[in-house]
Amino acid sequence: KQEESPAKKQKLPWYTRLRRYLFPVKGDRPAEVVRKIVFLTAVLCFLVAGGFIINYYVDTLRYNSTKPVLPGSGNVTSRDPRVPAEITDRFAELWMQNNDIKGWLTIPNTKTNNPVVQSSTDDPEYYLKRSFDQSSNRYGTIFMDSRNVFNRDAMSQNLVLYGHNMKDGEMLGEAQKKYRQLSFYKENPVIQFNSAYQEEDLYWKVFAVFITNAF
Image (cartoon, rainbow, N blue to C red; front, side, top):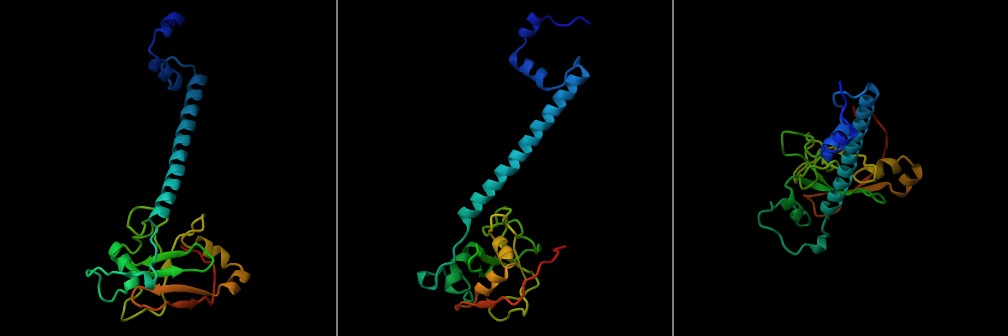
């Protein structure tokens, strides 16, 4: 088979030449086919990895920009009449943002300063990868076990809260690392978990810390 002359090849459109350079075409030698396949595979891996990295930082920015703040008791100036009477004034605004609000968890000297929700849907892990505003986000929201009773009139004796171990320390990331150190525990033996149904602050003594398999 007669090959194309260099002059004829130069007349091909630039995009055709680029396609022939990047993708296997009829007449390529085996070594050339392997080169193109390896190159295309590397480009694909680079794009996929880049997508994960971009998504990671986008989620982080979105989380930081939408993270709610618990108003202080003295900072509440108005209350929407749609908020149920059992919800305290301090949590009224948060209830308007998300009716699943149950309380607020604060662990001293860590980044844990987050709302706690309990799913009202059929999915008990609804907030595993959803922000407080219910948008998709890998940070999720600290949520209470769906089997727990937690309202104005009753509270389960054992409350189970779930939260991600984030590498940047958010959610429960710093807490689970720092409480492995006895010195940190001695300095921070008490955490705060306020209820959306009680005006007073609620303090809880940490009596044990253990690491277990989640599965």
